[in-house]
Image 1 (cartoon, one colour):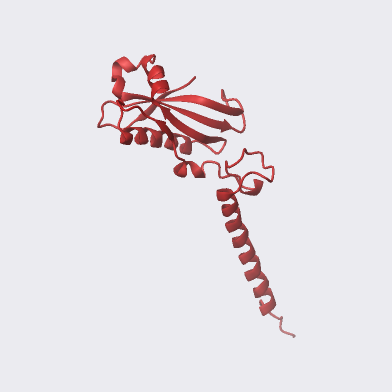
Image 2 (cartoon, one colour):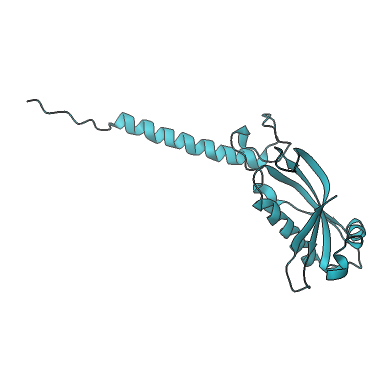
Length: 176
């Protein structure tokens, strides 16, 4: 009785597998580089510089950590720079926790605008003026979900409160 021949991988097949693996790795690296440095020229449905990776995989909230907030602070500010940055980081963390359907575009603190909004906010009496801060965000929702409609929202107020200056900021409310 003839013995069955065992099929083994030859040098040719091994080279093909290695090459395919290297191509996949190269494509993934290029996609990350594309996502980090390029404007949206391939038409992947995202506004410029919002992520995208060639329209194949979306990494919309990856850039939040690197995002710089625009801060307009007066000389006699109610908040220190560290307090404002802590509030900005709280807002960034809130958006990072959301799904990829929402992309934070920018965060800003304009003391005059913030204080006007804060002074009309009902919780200011409870927490005190120095424990309520309002930041303004621009963000995009890519697909409507629940009560959130698809589109870009500009100057969306994020109202943060804290019990006292030793406690962290938390997002208490948001809206126009």
